[in-house]
Image 1 (cartoon, rainbow, N blue to C red):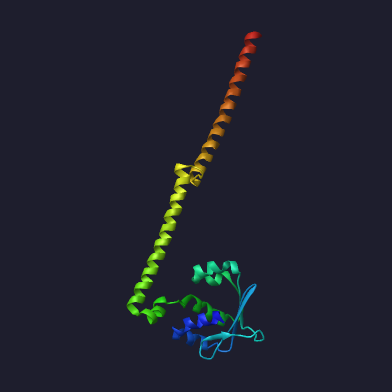
Image 2: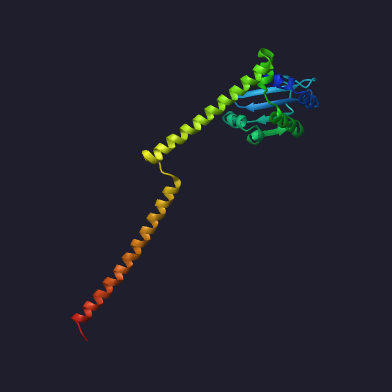
Length: 199
């Protein structure tokens, strides 16, 4: 099973994680992300293996497939996106491991290209990723600036709020002016009536 192999690859690099999982040897964790389901059993050595459908799950973790990008992006808050049923202690151990286990690319690459080259390759990849993110952010800012300033299709929220405030003030001023005009017209009418029908 690819998922078990991936998790075991991470566990193989972290003796403390295997030691923690050994306490739960024999227990099954069921991850339900309908329609996909994953059942993993903790082996005696602290690694994981595929569990059969007949083995009862000690803990069930339910999640939506649509939440997987959010979970991957913010592993510290991963368990806020899921529902957990069953053994709370086992679930807490899984939560701790999911936050702490990290794939160390340098560790795997140094077996192929040596430690110095591995460090440089990972640093280069991180730098390229940072450049891509920075380029994406700048492109987004430039497009937004174009549509806000040069070809105003979009309006800044602050500008829209200021315009709405100006419209409200203008409406109030017009209403006040209309009332003053009405009073003035009444005064003129009253004076006209008095001059036409003097006492």
